[in-house]
Length: 441
Image (cartoon, rainbow, N blue to C red; front, side):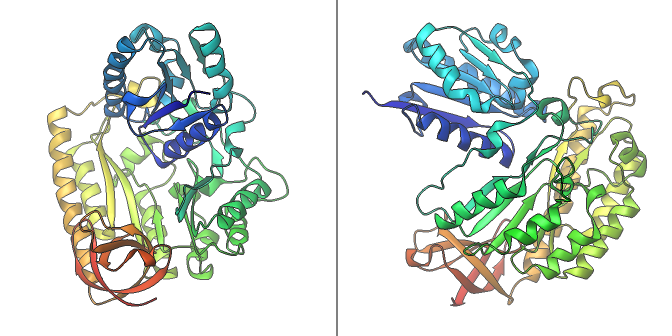
């Protein structure tokens, strides 16, 4: 049988990356081998994100480029997947005529069946229906050879309806996997050599709300920590309003839980947080930051911030800057507000000009760069435990690992260290990484 080749282009978050991994596993069962060159592919999938307008533009730009390959090879199958596919549905076919397949976030498990139908009948297919159960959540992704880290989806969907966000409309309501399914998957990953797992969900703090028998996120973390072979546990993303004291205490009481939390604040202005429908105040957020640092003094805290949300005045923006000065995040993902069709924010008054949004973002990012550099410099002369992941991108003579606080460290060493936990003295802190010297394993 002739080999068939698959190319996947992924846009967006870690959850999208994991979705793409599941797509590759499903298609391997019908004979497709993953390749890194789109020109060799018999099947191309674009897995999209719809959180910001820029991501949408990039996805359609890439789709337009790939259509040139379709002109050369009419048998090439091109599919459009993910949140943007869920949002636009059949409109994708009218916008780009030669797309064969459009499928949404609840239909990944149908991918082999849909591709087989297209091969037989050469018909266009659109599947964006929601179901009462997300079957793809239980698709096991075997780690690639030598992989030490793996993503594990513990839930999908969101019930929060933040004013700027399309996720509840595109991923559906919150649905949690059973603890048994999650633990079985992580045990399999451990037997394959995985040492670190990152638990994924739109709001992991609310894990278990739709499950019986009192399952919650804290009890899940404690059960995962009992699995032999797993050295590190991470999770993303957390909603501040659902961050409990019990979960905060896990950072000091569960040794395998890494000292890092991504806790999106979005704004430092109470009036903007209310317009965003975030469900907490700046004061409540600051109290949780204090509680985290009291429980775990070495914890690394990262966040998301949106500038230029409708109604954001210069005073509101300054309150965000003041909050950043108080907290001093380790790093921040910051964005200009991007209007998304169908969200509550689309109807709000007081739109901020693009010029003003750009200026505010530039200033905010410069401040965060200063905070990040200071945080990294403070680590100089400290000893950090690294999980060695592979060779450094900067030098063939260097290895790269991550601290428990999610910071990249480059240091002299050989490939025999891959997969090992080593202790490294930090000799230099840079903006985007650290330099270290190994002192023992």
